[in-house]
Length: 230
View 1 (cartoon, one colour):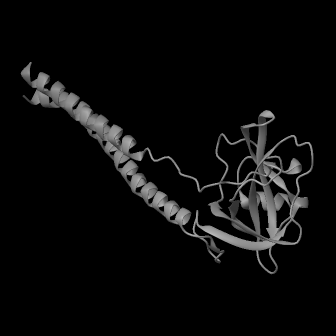
View 2 (cartoon, rainbow, N blue to C red):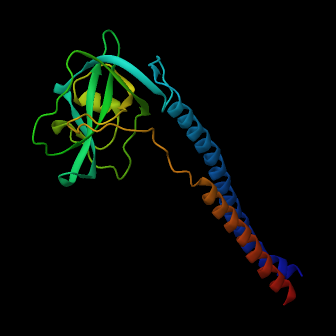
View 3 (cartoon, one colour):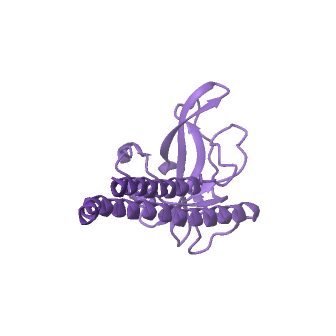
């Protein structure tokens, strides 16, 4: 009997360690599920509400409006996206333009998608304008992020601090205002129509991890039963 218990010791300890990892991953996904559901509910409320004046510390994905002067001379591009247009399939990017406000932080505005190659210069408004959109938090570059090119004002990570520094801006808000509305008559820049809806697959992930934990327990139990029956 003792020999059989010793035979189960190390496999049992390994099973317990693996079980703790699998249950931990499942619990983490449940926590992520609650966080994502709260975020999606917040986005839905923002979508239904009218745009409010920009507060000092806006919540992410809140719908706001703000007035200032667009600095088209400091325009930059973010990302790369292929779209179908009347001219065919075209590679483009998001147009980032600083919005200067008197005595306040400059806000980077994502005015929408524009093709990389344009037959004519974009018509940008002059003087003070009011931009309506949603607050998008800034990103940080990851291990596999494409390399930004500050010299050509082309960025692949939406980091307001890094973009602002490359454009020579000293006070930049820590978020980006993504413009919303219909496309202008000339077609570009093409702003967002709706707030984003992040995918929510955390429930299926949690079920997967908990299912693997259950399968591990069953396999160990069957193996232990076979050891004792021998």
